[in-house]
Image (cartoon, rainbow, N blue to C red; front, side):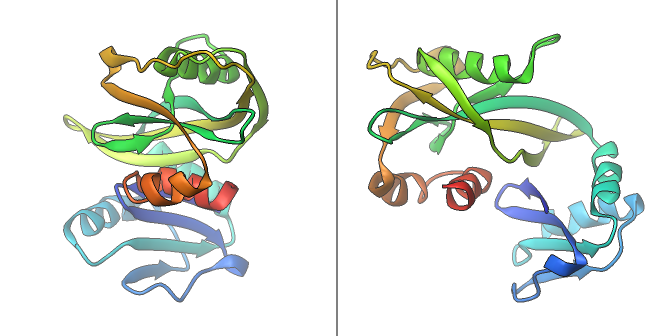
Length: 203
């Protein structure tokens, strides 16, 4: 399955065997073509009651590649970092809780970018990648362009007790470790749909 977020809404590409048909106010298609994309985006942006567009098709991978080719793509990488207390590292920026991430620099390996961004945004050290996680996609408008941002996520760990510092020049106000209770009570009530999906589906 592929999920693409537009704020709190989703476009999903599923195989026919894994279609979801019990979501209210959704649009469901058994076919896909690139020509559908402008209309799909327009409907999602204008209809306040529509939260899901799903394509249940046989050629999921090929159709999703065609979908991605329609957009200008930006690639980023980030980390879901755990400490020795099994807490997860979050940043607070633009009024919402988020996970540390940033754009991949030219010539930089994806894993290096993920570690660098966590280090820069949180002043975290002694980071080790445990395993890759599912990639995340979201769409936004930048001037006259429609951007598809692909974020590579990695589960990481650190044994460091170093004091964390938010990267203020990037608009980060706070950096905090959160346990499960805090994540459920604080983070999930004030985060992005894509971040909530990562937390709920992979932990």
